[in-house]
Amino acid sequence: MIKDRAFFEAKSSEIRRLTVQCIGDLGVGHLGGCLSVVDVLTVLYYAVMNVDPKNPHMEGRDRLVLSKGHAGPALYSILADKGFFPKEELSTLNRAGTNLPSHCDMLRTPGVDMTTGALGQGFSCAVGIAIGSKIKKDNATIYAVIGDGESQEGQIWEAAMYASHRKLDNLIAFTDYNRLQIDGPTAEINSLGDLAAKWTSFGWFVQRIDGHDHLAILEAVQKAKADNQGRPSMIILDTVKGKGVSFIEEAGVNNHNMPITQEQVQIALEELS
Image (cartoon, rainbow, N blue to C red; front, side, top):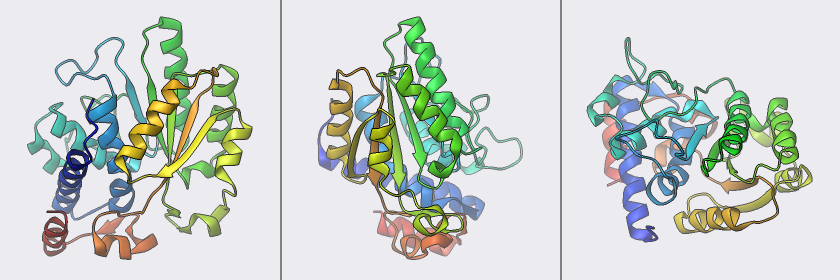
């Protein structure tokens, strides 16, 4: 298992470059929420998950449900880098006839395990997949990534309650807690309060970490896997929306779905080099 910080940092920078480039080719996209989840996706796909790019539908594989589906371009960049499809396809993002729509589509993109975008629904699907994995006894781990704005959806908490009821210890979820959503700061739109206490009260094993510290993410996943209390796990990631590119970070709430020029793409690529 890869545990080298230098590798993770270099790989995350590479994935951020691919993500910015493919959104830049289109000229507009969900830059903020894509860049905030790159580090957790990097750890999962390069050090944790049992997947095979040559056999995307392999039985018993681990699965990732990106419930905050607008971060699809970050996942596409990872999948292309892993070899699920050619990197050249990244330039077709959200164009007519593409296999890479703005939000994830399991029927179009090799390596995508669940169609997402309608906020809250992906997380419910992850719970269902985890139940199916238990029934099949395939020893897979199901991972899900939700947003903090998405966490205002009632469906998230219905799924959380049921996952705990079903003792889904094969489900590890992450909250991308970047504190911003489309309309403003999460705390001002609908405060989540003590998020860790909420998940704990629903019967989950909860950890809260720096969502850009690769080794902390890896350690948290290992702790979640080692927890033997028969319960699902939530890892709350403190992140920065737009992480890694100064002008995207500085855009704040305006980086949710922002335009980007080719000149700005070059500035971003230089920062990420």
